[in-house]
Length: 149
Ligand code: CA2
Image 1 (cartoon, helix red, strand yellow):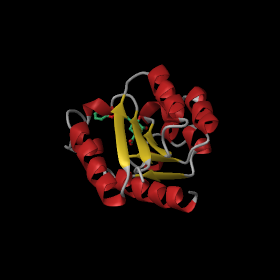
Image 2 (cartoon, rainbow, N blue to C red; image 1 turned 60 degrees about the vertical axis):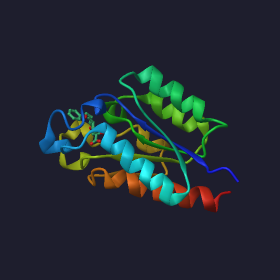
Image 3 (tube, protein in one colour; image 1 turned 120 degrees about the horizontal axis):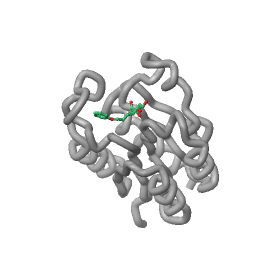
């Protein structure tokens, strides 16, 4: 049987990983993060579609495209977590298991980062664990997909 497809979607400015603000986001790049997700996918028997965009509309279109195609979504919506009702609506609409991930501990940072619209559409939220958060999110989604097959 084909491996379940999991979309790993990354929002604005995450293309700057490893290039700016290493004290918050570390020194590893987005390519390094993709490699971590690819390796986790291999271990868990998942096909991974890893993407990053700086556009809110593009991120929402990618969420729509997951319907009927993907078994689940791991998403770091970055700044759109705190602002985008439209992204939350899209994630609700696709009716797929969603795990929200943040590299940093958003609750330890500025007050405006403490609220995420996306969390209302997520089964679970992982923050503050850096790249490991993505691995843990993929493990969680593998279990959800298996249980709900
Ligand atoms: O901690 C996270 O993963 C965030 O989603 C990252 C977002 C931030 O707006 C959220 O509050 C928390 C920012 C992504 C920007 O990433 C950069 C990476 C390197 C250098 C500059 C920005």
